[in-house]
Length: 356
Ligand code: 13P
Ligand code: SF4
Image (cartoon, protein in one colour):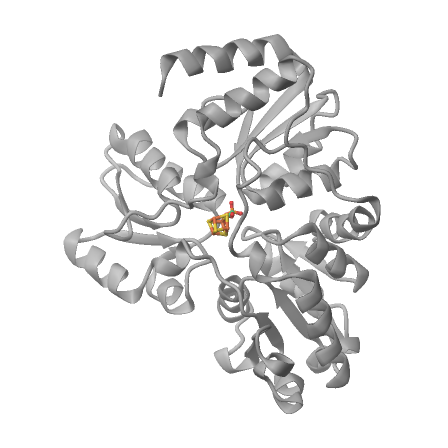
C-alpha cells in the first residue's frame, strides 16, 4: 500500500491515542487490518465493541450491520464511524422491516406466531434485530447459531415450537440439519417476494424451521464442483468452509465454522497438512501467507476470485480520511440507531450474549 497513506494513518492514530478504538473484521483488506486494535469474527467484534468504554470513537472496519450493532451495544455512548457508508451487506438487504412484518402476519394467520421464536443472524439491519427483540427472539452469529437454535426451541413446549430464521437460509438450514439433527424436510423457505411467502398454511404448520430466503452472494459461489475440483487438484486436502455456504457444499466439506473457527483450526493444524478454504478471499490469502513458512498449504476453494465487494470498500484512503477527520475533531460517517429501534434490538443482542 501507498507509504504516504500508511504514514498518515499512523500519524492520525497516534494523535487520537486512546480516544479511538479500531475494530477490523477478518474479511478486511490487509492494509486496513494493519491498523486494527482488535480483529475478529462478527461475534467477537460485537463483544469487543463494548470493551473499551474510554474510547470516544469506534472506527468499525467491517460492514454497516456490524457498525449498527456496535452502536446498539454501546448505547450510543461512543460514536461509531464506518469509513465508507457504501459498505453494506447484500444478505442483510434481503430482509426489510416491511417484509418481515408481513411475514409475521402470515405466520399469525396460519396460527403459528405464538409458537414461533425469531432467530436473526447478525447479518441483518437494526430494524430486523428490533423485530427479533420485540418477539422474544435472539440474534446469532455463525459461531453460536447452534446454541441460539437450541435456546429458541427450549422457549416452548416440544414438538409445537418453531423458529423463524432470518435472513440467511443456508446458515439456518445447515445449523438445523447438521447440529440439531433435523431433516431437510423440517425446513421450509419463506420467499418474501411471493404472496404468503409462497407457502400454504399447512406447510407452515408442519415446518419446524421457517427459513427466510436470503443468502450471501460470496459464499453462494462455492459449489459441489469446487469441492470435487480441489480434491482432485490437491490430493489429501482438508476442505474447510463457512456455514453461509449451501448445504450440499457443507455436507461435502470436512470442517465447517465461522471465520474465527477457521483461523483456530489452521493454527492447530499439523505441519504438512493441506487446506482448501471456502470463505472470503482477503482472509484466505492472509492465512495462506501466514502459514506458508509453517509448511501448511492453504488454498482458496474456488478457482474464481471471490472478495466480498462491500467489505472491500473499506480501504486505506477511506480509513485515513476517517481517522484524520476524527483527529481534527470532525466525526464523519457516524452510524447511529434511533432509540426505539435500539431498545428492542439490544434485547435481542443481549439475549445472544447471554446464550448458555
Ligand atoms: P463471521 O465472521 O461471524 O464468521 O461472519 C462472516 C460474515 O459473513 C460476516 O459478514
Ligand atoms: Fe454480507 Fe456475504 Fe459480505 Fe458477509 S461476506 S458481509 S454476508 S455479502
